[in-house]
Image (cartoon, rainbow over all chains, first blue to last red; front, side, top):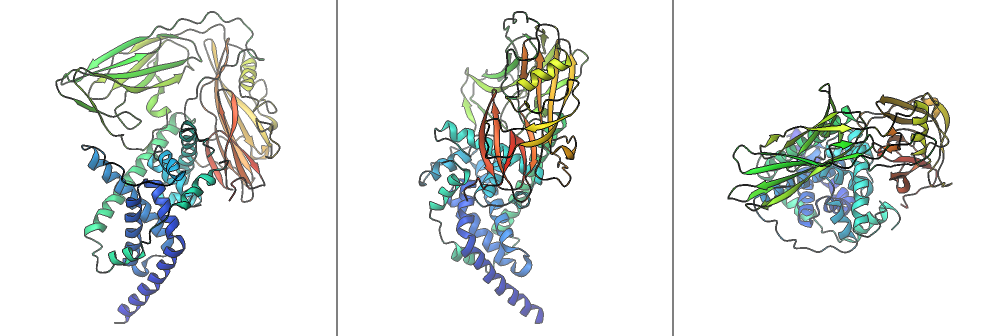
Length: 169
Length: 388
């Protein structure tokens, strides 16, 4: 009984902490995953599922915010991979949403980066994460993240420059 | 928009949905080993595999060539380098080879831009496929798509350049496939390489769709004149650096000299880099391959850089190390690879990135205090340049 009571208490405290994380950083996380995935539905599904999994884990998370960011990006990456497999033999579904300018140009340009470059660039330039934490989120090494960041910035600049909007990234 | 975060700040104008209720609705009573969580676990495995592939690709690249990519040639006529008059450039003599897949459905061809080149020339190899069958063929173009590969092999059978090890391999998935109708032909990309070896060489090409290795193409490498001396070659490479090494030229024998690396645009808003600069020289018939290095500050010693290993600068901050390879012949100096550098600004300084393209430098961006590895050179400033 005591163990269950402790677990329930931890779960409640974790829920409060996770709600605080969501209220303070949830919007930014959603937009970051949107920039990464290019799809609001993928972003919403990944963020909601990441918080749901965090809630299920109760007090087992030492750093709920870091955990949720990592989970949301990996869930989105998985969804994109699933989608690529599903659409390999089918026509790509038409885009059914509009994004405001100039964010749509940025997101379209980000889509030209490799998934890992895109995740690194978004996490660094939008979410403000340092290299060490990006390495943890994308499951890579710090050295590799630095290369992805450098290559990603360079490629993003080139894509934006070709689109005629300067590309000062 | 002048700074990167200006662009990313535009994302803040996108309204975000409130997902907290959705998250709570998904959480209670869910079996973490079933349904969505199980899918999530599988997805995590896929992502982890992609990450491992990406790291291995970077490692493979680093084992063979420390530079991130081959840059367009940066020909610098004149300068303090070679003084002998080069002969006429040999005319391009393209050559194609092809093969057919085992089932006879696809012919793949590789076209080499010329069978006679000079050191410093850019050799281009392009690939195309033809649908010989009665049914459409699905193909995709891109780094992870259906592409041919190229190796250069010298007369002794040693591979001197391997596309798979010399170029950055993205971990991105294959792009959406395209349908090639019966009888149609399509280009599937290719590669460029700056010639940094004496000949003769063999161009070894390999095709996708089960076609495999094509016949080798013999490549004559004709030097335009005698190789410049080591001292002249280093001077020509310094001259081709767009002014980057003008205040930090290595000694004529390539040994280190102390000087400073200055921002190529003369900017006074960034700090110049006190540095030790040196050169490695590889000699061949009619050519010298000069690799320029700098390491800042000089007290850190001659620090080598690599895309895949952490750079040890000691305790000095800010610190930076860089490498850049040139091919030098009687005709002049050509950048064989892009400049690659690693830097650490320390906790206080911001980093301004400069990129080189065809002998011209431009300010490419700005980074918060921290570490950086990649193409271009970094200068430091005590003023925030991110505009946060």
